[in-house]
Amino acid sequence: MGSKLSFGLVLILSLAFVGGCGGGPLGVMPGGKLSGKAAPVPANWDAAGEYGFMQIETLPADPYSVNIAYTVVDGILYANAGDTETQWVQNMEADPQIVIRLDGVIYPLRAERVTSAAEIARFGAVWASQNSFHRDPAGLDQAWVYRLVPR
Image 1: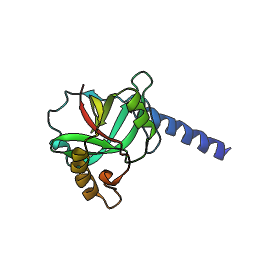
Image 2: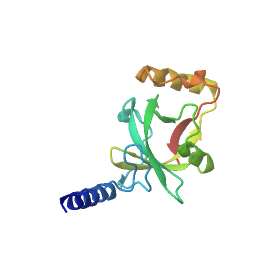
Image 3: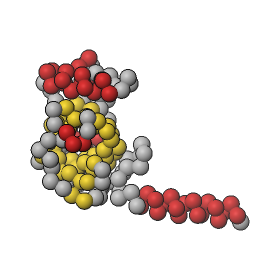
Image 4: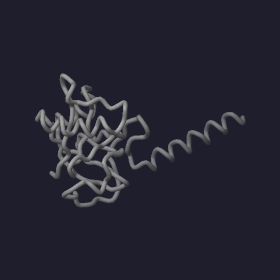
């Protein structure tokens, strides 16, 4: 009897916690539509810091959101999937209209894939300096680096 009660309590608390996450991702588990206070997109992202984590929502018609790292270079916000065409990358290729949540604030953006070798090199130098596990995308055969810009 006690174990059934404990399991039920854990289940209820877990569902309440997930429900309180605003439909967004939970750790490595993807989520749905992001919620939060909407704000105008800044002209320059330097105030976000050189790097950090954000939630990104893709596919507005059927929202899919994940936690990812971001990097800011010269005031421009970037998302990088390295050489892996992840689900969120596939979604942005199908529809570049995205939403990000950064510090609880929602920003509507558009994802532009970076194809310029010079821009990838500039981004890669900053990206690789942030963490010894970050591979410089300039050295990859194919890189999925995105500049996140106002719609």
